[in-house]
Image (tube, rainbow, N blue to C red):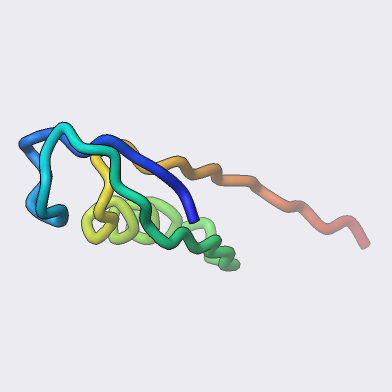
Length: 63
């Protein structure tokens, strides 16, 4: 559970400028290099917050 203060640009919430409590989820995935920009764009497109927190990490395996 997290708290946020939505602004009037977000239609996901019933009240603007009122502290909201929302469920929060962590998403992890493995994506091919050539699809990472598409995956991040899809995440940003459907995320309900104005500025979602996310990180992109490149994992290189040495054999």
